[in-house]
Length: 404
Image (cartoon, rainbow, N blue to C red; front, side, top):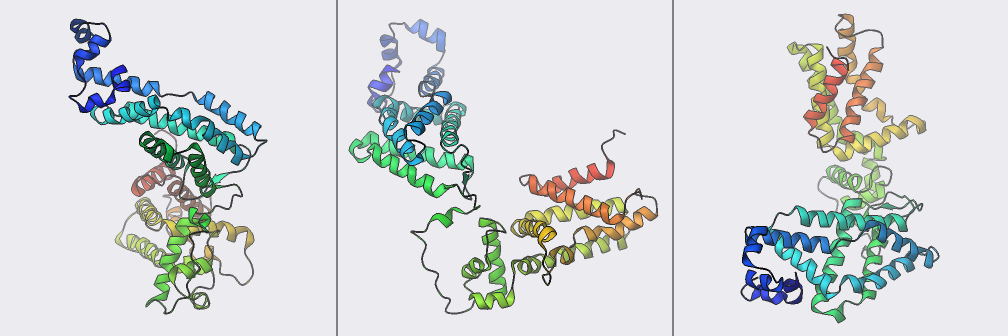
């Protein structure tokens, strides 16, 4: 460790000589090789030591954040600035900077678990500070940032400053680092729970909306594509027809002639898939599949639809929830137009009549329960393969929980 930290240039001049390590330790060759067996094992232990040497306790970091917030009378800007200015110089000391860089230098040649654990620990420290600073504030992160990716952004920013400071200290004063961290927080954090996208905070970069000079060749398709983009970014409730029209480069008045409401956009996007599901069920029945097989095959198709049309299916669920408690006279009911549960009603009715399924509940209620269970599974298990989600729900609802 002494050789590496005090004279790191030796790595470029013939590498790390074990003889010098042994001399520095006042040891012997026999003792060294009895303890480590090979030089590669020794380097792994050195890497472990470098990583352990850089660890900071989460409790200590939280206490520092609390003290800074108290000293600033709850002013988060002052608290963040004070935290960075107070601790950045120490974090970028020659020893700490060299330790970090050496860990990266040795890391790729050694098992990576230790280095990855160090990054996870750093992310935990950043998240702990964030939670102290924004406790009880209702703060959320603007999309597409998550807690994990937010920590990655900040840790990468700080690590970049550390590397530059190692070479050119005067170019990286602590005040600059504090300003950069505050800039990231200002864009990333939303304390008003607007469910915004990070682009909504980029007011200085946003250009004035350009008035379209010519319609796209297929304005309906352009609007649907734009809606998919905007729903993915902001969700159903935070997306307006104006934003969709701007993204599609279709004048707002013309966009509203094609799609007066967001509901009609969703209908137009999903109706072909809905009609296909209806035909597929009819085909399965005509071919001669039994009711259990038809339900299972329908589940697979529905799960694949959710995965393929994630933006519009998410928007559909939000619209249906709103439609349920806030439907106004004269508006299209998306529940009637895209009645996904209704697709199963004829199959369930016939299966109840022939004794395949129990008939103690109305088929309409069973169809709603089956469909909603599948959709809930798909929406809450997005990373799971659609077919696996369909299989899980199909097995559960058709076979039940009892062991047979």
